[in-house]
Length: 348
Ligand SMILES: [Zn+2]
Image 1: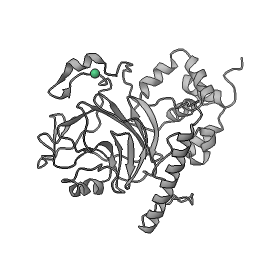
Image 2 (image 1 turned 90 degrees about the vertical axis):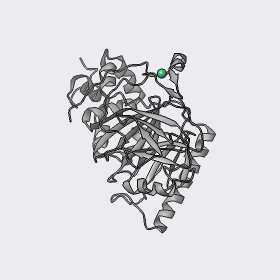
Image 3 (image 1 turned 120 degrees about the vertical axis):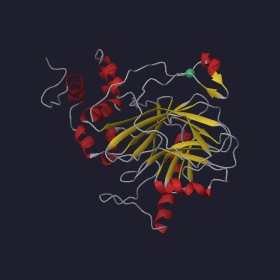
Image 4 (image 1 turned 180 degrees about the horizontal axis):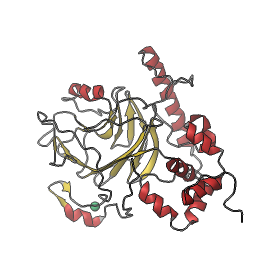
């Protein structure tokens, strides 16, 4: 697939002014509608009264009249293997109630929703076929929940980056990455999903793009994770702008902050959760073990993505190779399109 560029617009965020466009319980401003690429939309279900779609199938209104349980909507296409997907939902109503969630799931996971029709629950992640991020700021899979990021509400834009090359999923809140939430998603047939328990809760699909993995993308990922490289990359005139247009959803992940005691404790707690989850799966005969790795697949990931150097055994083969490419060659590749190891950007 050809790489498409999109007009990059910094002003995607809602402001006080947008409240004047809050009509009939729905936010009607255009903030965040800058991408305008939709490769899929929400699937209509003629017999379904638990949610309503607009004529273009972008806006979902859950429980349009009143709510008597949980409603879930699914995208019209499954995700393909070896692709990157990014989609974004803008919350256009006030959120309240038991839960409002954004996530993914298998066909089976979607069919299971009939069990929750008349129950108010956080449906995505209640079983091992769905994965979700709640408006309370938690993520959930296979009945295990973890504090993940900020909560979201009216005017928030929740982005999802699903990397079907590595099987990892990361959420974004207002275009800021929140760290990898789930892994072990490779080789599954997954659909985008959203669920809500609150009457008249409404959200709008504002973009749905996909991209084949390219060497350019991997180089950019390396640069985004290395503060020295990122500084150098940012100093090359115009370069950032070009790549921001191509990969608007890829954001630098440079963290200079030292983890706090609470964060460390949370990490330990999450590790314990994972062990627990793995054990339960063994019992249930549902254990996905990567061929080359004796460890069981981890469904939750650390909120702090480890940097490339400390993460070599978990990186994809192509990414591992890039580790041995001199830093400046990565920058040269991004600025000139050739990956040449033999010389250095700084040499005369
Ligand atoms: Zn707005």
